[in-house]
Image (cartoon, rainbow, N blue to C red):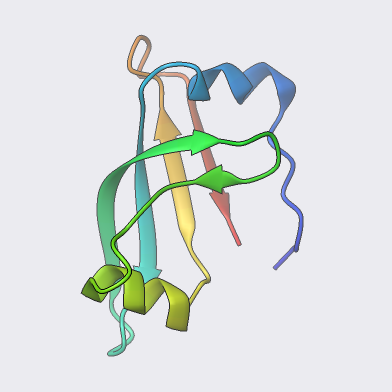
Length: 84
């Protein structure tokens, strides 16, 4: 997987709205798990949060390969999906 995924400039505005994303990863049994989460973009990374002691936080630290999709809250036909 690429180390650096560039978000197209014409989709960066998705992060100016309240951005509801869907974060997917593989759990310890190899099943895909997906959570809706608020996401933002810090200019370089897509950022979300999870409590350090939570099962989700632990799983993401152990298996950081994820897929994230973000859909516009104003126009559901505008969306972004990335993996890495």
